[in-house]
Length: 236
Image (cartoon, rainbow, N blue to C red; front, side, top):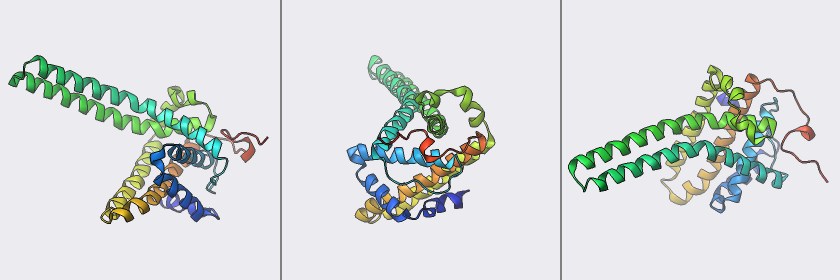
């Protein structure tokens, strides 16, 4: 499926235009709104591929993509919040232990252990969150309900399946490989920054193609026409 995901964008007639738009939005991600639009596009990729459509979506209906992206970001943020809070709590507890101990060696050692333990727990929970987020986004993309991203009765059989785990690992490999390429490109600062944005977008689309395709195979979804697809508003 990795080779299919890499070739996915090229199934579209205007795939070069799509990559150019995605890359430019990546370069402008510091403005925040472009990042939401990219997330909205990735959700559109998941939404179409889970229904067996091998043609990549276009960048259109920008308002819908922006709203979709904001919702997708909010879902990912909620999942990432717990590890972040735990890291902060343990870090603060370690700092307080050191201060309360008056800088003694015992207090310093105890504070360091508490902080390290917190970081390890936060790291472990972060991995779990990264594993959960694609499935949560896929369930949202299917139903167009944010609450669906947290319906663990629906998510559990998907998350515990070997097929999803394999797909997640493949998506991770694609993203990790792209990060290596970007790292190499960064040897030439300007080139790495500019070209890296396009490589990252291409890899993200490939990764979410894998997630969408796998979700459709694990979670039977009826084919729907473009006008019936969740997340799209009727033209006025």
